[in-house]
Length: 399
Figure 1 (tube, helix red, strand yellow):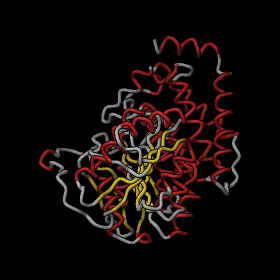
Figure 2: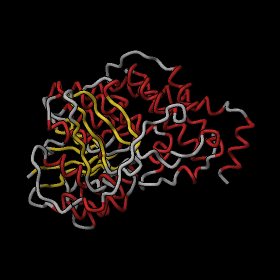
Figure 3: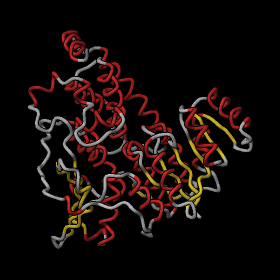
Figure 4: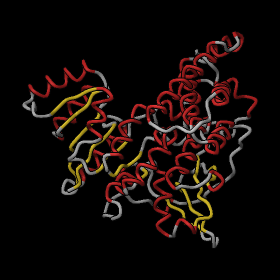
């Protein structure tokens, strides 16, 4: 029986993890949950799984949850809150495996503490590895425990790498759907609306990741994540636009052999792979090979999608640069969603922030969080001084 703690239990990855656990009750026990701000869902998860501990983001929500659980006869469940509560969930002694699925840097400290506590960690939060991947992977090596990717692309790479040794790898390829503007001329980017950017042709995701997919920044983050997870330089991690999203990633070896991984587009499969690694166990998730008709591939246009170029440059620089990249993107995307800036302003804000950031190496999570806060402040200041003419145009575009 593997005991699991989930950071981000009320999100899509968290819920999918619980679905996997429900399908294999003889293999998995849920012992700890970090549930964020979704009080009703946290209560239902507590009642269903009866973990040892649940953490909420805010103290008032924790107080209400504690009361509701007690009324339901579940007062034995410990309820905590805030960053300290999330760390307590991540480092619970009874937990064998921690799923890191809190969006953004909010889950950074807890993920690092889980690794430091000697847990095997399944990483679904790419921002953790973008902002602090050098620290997290170094600690995982010291602990002798694997970091297992849950993101479908990196999970696919991990699977393909079982076909050879790392020293035999020529390069890895991450596939990208291309987003909703793959065939939109760059000259029209200044008129893109929020509604258009949120209309992804393949996936249904949260708002930030959907906008990041539209700018290809999400794929840029995945490049950085791949460099950290697989200890490869950016020159050995390439992106290929693949609109069908059938092949999740592939690995090219030095003899010219290429291994590709494709499967159903169901996040339960990479979650199951991570939870049971190094085993593979029977499941009912099957890809209909007979439906496979054609596969299209093309290189990404980095002039049209400068966010991908900025990510490669940050990956080369490392240190505080990737922290600034992630922070500026989060601020810029939020501003675009609010109608404060245009779609084509997103990479401008990011480039300006990264250019102004400290490029030094970061030695602790505290330094990462400080660099993150500095970059957010700078990006917000840049947004405030955007030209009024652009602001008027943007306001019209989101009505």
